[in-house]
Image (cartoon, rainbow over all chains, first blue to last red; front, top):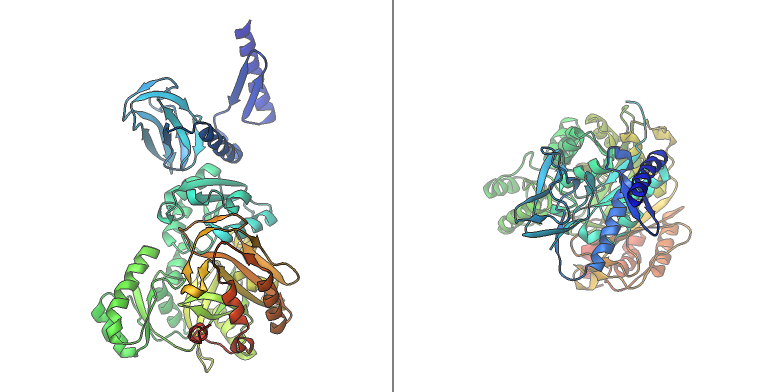
Length: 144
Length: 453
């Protein structure tokens, strides 16, 4: 049963991440591929994340070389994809959005700055995780 | 305060000084976090720091001077302290205050001392009141052109207009007579506003033939204040230092001791803490006057490090972390003679016009007594948005003659192509007979240039 297998694998990955105090683990075989990243609670582990994310974003940008509707971060801070009011994601991949919709908020020096979509369309991809630190110019969303 | 060394330091600067600070962080086992603009993504500080955070676009106003972005970067990276380097936010007391409110240790003096000494006219008042000699000048900010005119008449021309918040020659104008005054006054104000977000200016008597001599201070949190000797920075072009040396060939031991003692006295009088530099103007008769205090690391600090063997950046960090200075004044040994040449991306044959672009070949000199503090490398594209300093060549020897020989050797070895630099001009300076004789004033470069070199 594939579902059972996914469930068990996820459980194992959570255990592994806790045990090794890492925040990113992945598993892949012929059938499934799981990437698991913990949301940041412990600030101690943030530093390696920034470089990793930045590098990854660059690589992705190279692949997507034709003009895309990309939304980049205009400030440094923690990005929140989940609304503190509704406790739900502002948007998910595949969601239809209108110009002016709030896609996320960035918390910078304890002030929350909403990120509003300049486009109407569909969220093709979310490049960041909830509560991760973001830097200026970091790719956050792709709209189609 | 109990001493506990920082685990992470955020560096709010770029270029050679950012790299300089990263190096000491590594020596101390401290993780370094560099913040940078989009123009510096490919720079060595970004590559060599333990982590890097982009804080804004090319323009310094939106990146290296962007306080909220820098504080946020410290927040997300969990940095405990901020090293500001020189320039940018290094002498911005508002930034120091914000750091404090955000529980970030600012590596430098506190905002009160910075306000007192960083602001040139406040500093002058304080030093004057403490009984130390100051240059004749306006005891307050000059607000209007009328005020400027009447004051200049009182002390007599030539005068110099300076920015209260300034440094590095920006916002400064020498005025020889009243007809030049209005244009100089307005442009100095404008330049000061652009460079320091503060357009207050003041006026001083200008000495045409003078020596610019500064004293390096280290002061901990326990009222231990020592000096690391003087630096002669008289070789300047339009108030921009080009070459510095220590000890000064102009001073004798008696005046050297006096000026260093006065510097320590000034630092004590204001309860100064951390590394700082007290600048003096010394006239032909070796009378010296306090000019200003720089409450930060200086570009030319390495010559003092080479002369004394003390890592000043290390002590900036340790003092901020609450460490006590382990040495007393008598423990400081002044062994070497050291000289620094600032290698700028400027064309000496074309009025020192700054130029930017890609570096093609880059080779740094080596060998005994040679140190190169630089952030450039082969194929590095020098961005046009910041100052033109590419690096500093620092040589040292057991006496001045040995230092000059080594400087000649090192300047011959250094290769930087693709950009015009001040390297050939330095060769001319150090082979000039007046320089070799140690017989120069702040007028040296003007004289050298007028001979058509």
